[in-house]
Structure formats: structure tokens, C-alpha cells
Length: 349
Image (tube, rainbow, N blue to C red; front, side):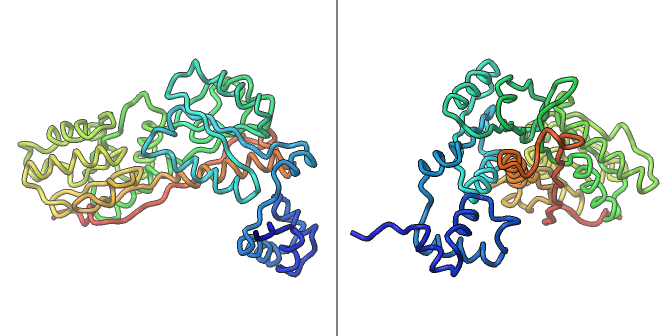
């Protein structure tokens, strides 16, 4: 039977000291070991199939090297699970593992989920939500380093760092893309007004018009909900029986499902996308945006990046390299990304 590789084996293959291997594989390489040496150590560990002994590490460091993640419904969601994926990427690269509990939108289970994870001696906690929203932070999150991903502390005086998408800039850049194509009559299907992301995206839409020294037509802004049927029904109201000179030349949607509904309405009315009507989505939802016909231009939510940034901040607090409670604004905003496809084109003459 082959002998299990040791840290000394990794050190010999990488041409470094055993202490350098320990620093890098325990997540403390930055500032202590040269980047080139870190890369050699990780490659050697991979080639030798080496992993540190988790029990020995926890005894030496007085840490479990486990991060607890609580979500409202991310685990059972087909979409926002990328946040947890990004967080887990960073955790594993620093020698941590993640344990995830999903409350399935039952806020009454939040406190017990946190307590369950604390009983398992987790080193830190993360709360992740589907969709941007305020969070009534469970008290147990104050007992260990904690961070919020895609949600924010709902208290009058927030105390926990949060990582969220820059929705205002995303809404502005999406609208600017349509303006640059010559569109001026741009309808906005803005999602449900009660959801925190919706007014932020509307603000970005308004900012784009102001930046272009153009007036905003309030009648073209509609809080239409989030589902395909909402997009279809509102697009029919905007387009059906309306003379070409009077109808919008572009419709910007607050998510990709609304855009699917708009595309269905356009097809029902015999309108060609993007020749007669440009359609803009938001989210870049997997298996929807890229597979539409025509493929959907959209503003991608940086879900994996949010997870990575949140976990990096959390591990920084745990390792003592930074404090999530010492940040001046307790906020990290991650930029969204414009994804250009075939559903937007020049405004029709």
C-alpha cells in the first residue's frame, strides 16, 4: 500500500522549507511566502495528493477550520447557489471546509440554524440570500466573525459587513447600452416594487438618462413583477395596437424571466427582435439568457464573485489580517457585468 504523502514530501518537491508548506496550505502564505513559491507548493501538493491533517490542525490552532453558511433558500434555488460555490472556492483554497444549512425561507429557523453551527465550533458564519434583501441578523452571528452575502444588516446601526451587487451602476450601464444604440423610447419593466433591488435598478435607469441630458418618461417605467407571464402581459400592453411611432423601441427588463415574456409577446405580435424591438435582460440566468432566440443581452449579477468576496472578508477576520467590523461603511459592492448578445441592436428609424 502506498505511503500517504507528508508536508515534508511537498516541501522537497517544491524546493521550499516545511514551514513554508505549512504557511501556504494553512492559508497564511500571503506576506510570508513568495507568490512563485506558493504556486509551486500548491502544485506539488496536488501532484502528491497531499492534504493537511484537519484534526491535527484544529488542535494546534484551536480552530475547527469549518465555516458555517446559512441560507434562506439558496441551496434549493437553481440560481443563487453560485454565491455558495464562490464562497466554497475561497474556503477550500485556504484549507477550510463549509457546512451549509438552508432554512427554506422560514425565518423562525434562522436562530436555531446559527446555534446548531456554533455548537459544531465553526470558526465563522456567513448568511446568504436569494435576491438582495434586508436581514434580521440572528444574535448568534455576533459571537464569531460573520459576514452577509447578497443581504444587509437590517438594524438601525448595522454591525456586520455585507457584500452586495452594485445594482444602481448595473441599471445605469444597461440603460447606457441601449442609449448608445440610439434608443430614446426605452420602457423599463422594473420588477416588484417591494423588492430592494427594483428601485436601485430604476435609479440606475434614471441616472443614465440624466447623464445623457435626456428627460425620463415616467409612463414608460412599470413595476411589473418578476415572472415570464408578467413580462408577457406588460409587453402586450406596451405594444399591442400601438402605432410604430408611438411604441418603445427597446424594453429593459429587471430580470431575464421578464425578458422571456417580452420576447413571447413580440413573437405574438409579429415583431422581430432586435430589428423592431430591442430587449435587455438582467441577471444572466443560467440556461435562460444564453439559450433564448435570439440570445439575450443582459446585465450579469456577479453571484460567484459575491461569494468569493464575502468569504475572503470573513477569512481575513478569522485569520486576523482584517476585521469585518472595522470597515468604514461595513459594505462591499461588487460590479455587475454587461453581457452583449443578439437581442439588442440599433434603434429602428
